[in-house]
Structure formats: C-alpha cells, structure tokens
Length: 272
Image (tube, rainbow, N blue to C red):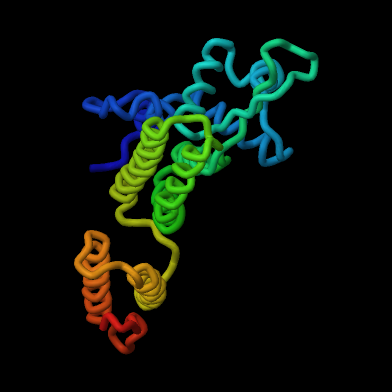
C-alpha cells in the first residue's frame, strides 16, 4: 500500500472515519477540525511568547483566529471541557459585567498541539510528509507517548483539586483523543514508510540501538523495584508488578541473544 496523495491524506483527517467511537466526541473533533487546532495553537503561541493568558476578545478582534463569535465560543468551550485549555476568570479592565476570561494551555493541551502540528508539517515550514511522519513518530514514541500517562495522572489530580475546570469523564475523552492523534501520526508514518521503501530512523547502528535499549531497560527495572518495595505479595498490585518484572527478564534475554560481541544489554538486577 503506497502513501496516499497529500491532499487525500489531509481530507481523510478532515472528517471522522466510519465507525469512529462516538464516546470520544467532542474531544476527537480537535483532531479533525482545523478551527480547534488554530485556536489551541494561538493560545499556546501567545502564552509561550508573553507568559499570559489570552482573552476571547483578543482571539476574535485582534488575532482574528475565526470569523464567527459563536464558532469561537464553541471551540473554546470544547478545548476547555476536554482539558486542553483552562479558563481563569477575573474582573474586566473596563468594568464589564461579563468579567474577563483568560485562556491558558494545560500540559495535555500542549501535547495535543504538538502532535497536531506534526500531522500538519507545512505549519513547521517543511515539506515532504513521507519523511516527516516517520521521523516525527520515531521521536514522539520515545518521548511524549511514554510521558502521556503521567501527564494524564497530573491532570486528574488537578481536576480533583479544582485547578482545571472540567470533569473527570471529559478529561478522559481528551486524553483518549490525544492518544488517537498519536495513533494517527503512527498510521501516517507507516504509510510513508511503504511509499519510500522502508522506515526512516536516525542513523544509529543496531549496536548503538542495542546499548540504548539496555540503558532504558535498566532504568525501567530500577523503577519497578522501587515500586515493588512495600507492595504486599500476592496482592493485585503485586501480581501486576510480578508480571512486568518477568517480562523484563524475557526482554533482557531476547536482547542478549542479538548482542553479538558484547553484553551491553545485560540488566543487572536481583531479578536475574
């Protein structure tokens, strides 16, 4: 299966695929609707540059992100409900009875914006999706994808403490929609690899990658051992950790088979 034409690829992202799970709406609309991406990106841009929130008035009258006031309100409401933006209310400078609302990005919103921009590489000023997508997925899978559960955990705590004005259920939809965006980036990467005849990865040798994996395994094993202390033997938590630790034994063993000429992947741990 070759890479579809650029225009076709973008049109596929512009609408919900058939059979798309309804429970992810409206948050998944952020993945497929340009207006959400534009507004989210603009809030993050201003906050990054000036360290402040952005008001509805600025977005509509100054930045002119959307032509419709009602449309902008719906977009901001959705981005806030899904946990991508947080709204801080205060007194308007001119004493307006409506008050002032400043919108700030959340960590989850920054992750979503990062992935959406990578899905639209023209916004980075680069061309050649067939190369950008595999490279983007390679690095996202090693960084943001790994950190997303911890970011979600932080957001859940922030909701519970009233720091983020959304519900746990709507935040869950926002989290799952972010995972969906990452999955879409992966699908684009695999199609691009088919088009160019193979994966695009940084120029590491198998030996270098093996050493990298070995270091990562040791870090993960240390983490599992720290968590395992104090967990009751035979408990649900203990059984989950036992299974993970056993899987790491198998991973280390499988990598050592391929470690021709050395033992850099050996996981030094009481597990062995």
